[in-house]
Image (cartoon, rainbow, N blue to C red; front, side, top):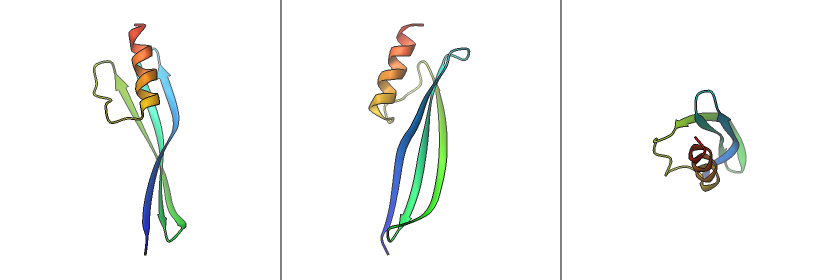
Length: 69
């Protein structure tokens, strides 16, 4: 039984009123080539939060947005 977990960035969101940047991820669990579950997870960050573990495209967009504030 082979278990595989994939995490894909689905959307990047800018919330100007809150001065936050968000990322929505789709997490899929696949067993023996068949998808058994799919979930979405949204994370929101403010300027100064640690985003080093996030996708590089998200980091670039967040840093660019925060540099304009």
